[in-house]
Image 1 (cartoon, one colour):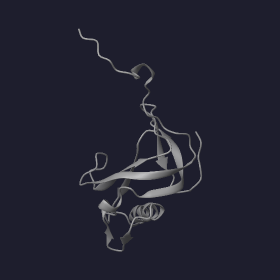
Image 2 (image 1 turned 60 degrees about the horizontal axis):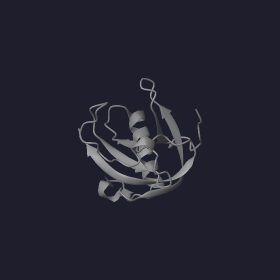
Image 3 (image 1 turned 30 degrees about the horizontal axis):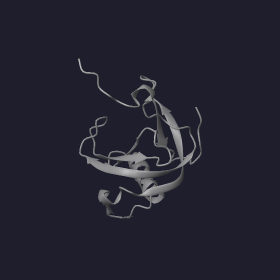
Length: 137
């Protein structure tokens, strides 16, 4: 068997969630999904990084569309999308927006929360769009 040289593997770690604090963040990509894995409805998966934290796990934020099934839920979806567009200064109007404008957009001093998956125990970060306050685990 051939021994492979792989410098640094002994000290390697996987990316992980950063502490719940405020960070400057940047959009890496935005992909439209006709059917989300969880609801089967269309959404936009936005990949977000924390440039100052190279070992932080990648964040994903999902923008949902109003579907006309529930007026209150539609208002929440539209409000959350509006707030997301505002904090990243992404151009939009009453007719919509272009996902090609997302990559490279930045937002400063954004509060990030820690979200812990109840099944796997895995921690990840998410943007606090609702309160703007930090919630520590």
